Length: 279
Image: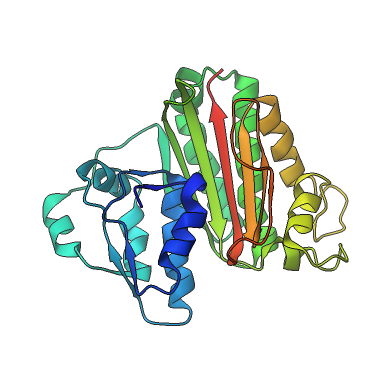
């Protein structure tokens, strides 16, 4: 594999299915979704066996970026890193960057407050300078980020991760921000089992994202992800949610991919990807 992203996640799952080594040696590009996907796969495999071997990318640029995003801080928990010695001798902690949120765990509400606080501090560089967002749009971004993180606290019954990156997107010739949020929880189908009769991953995702249905019946709940969808649509972004063996995407005019996918290779929990272009 030469890239790790939302677009290649299915190929990644197939690539390592049944393998005792996650080989990233040929990877020349990775985004937050790809990074979190690797970490969550390591966690998942570790539930049934000893640590899986991880062969790191040969690319210096990719290694530097992984280090800057705190990937290795968590990778060592879930993998046996084959080329760890070479890495530790060659790379030191990169300088602080104000255009991304490093990989951050989500376990409790206080974690969300920490994440939001950090992103707020960097928002003028991330969103105002590079994406030309207004204060209203920045506030909407913060709310959307809070909601996708809160989804893990309320619905997954498991720990999750979030990562955010700003980079130059060549297909659009624009700056974009990517938000990735993942967990190994019970997934949408199980979370909404008492609210929707049909036991189907895609229906469950649609119920949460389109209809605003929540596992809770409290007034004021249930519109979190539906609100995120409206924000992403308003700012001409792309949103995808994968859970179990299905994936639902909200695709703008400039986007690509399939809106509804079923019968994918099973992977637990939920995997959320948001891409927002500059205006």
